[in-house]
Length: 119
Image (tube, rainbow, N blue to C red; front, side, top):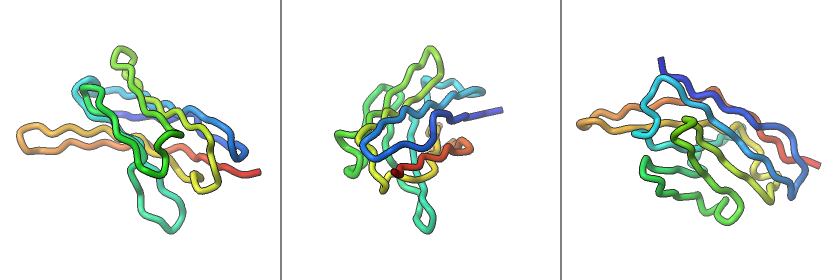
């Protein structure tokens, strides 16, 4: 059974930092592309950052220079280091695992962790 479990969310003041973690189990972690998405009330879920199985990364323009995604294949963990947070970053953050095998896409989601940026 595939499980993605996020942690590290919470409330932080504008300008502050948080590190989100996602622990994966039940998958051959190193073969999956991993991503962080977020969703705030009334908005669609959006991609924040992604990292391929080979370690290539991409970050949404809104977070470039402030957020960094990384992975540790040995620990089956993916991280999102967030700095210079602002109220617009307030959302539920979801961990995502994705893999394409012979034209079939396998995708899994975590339960989400709330990040609130407020003074």
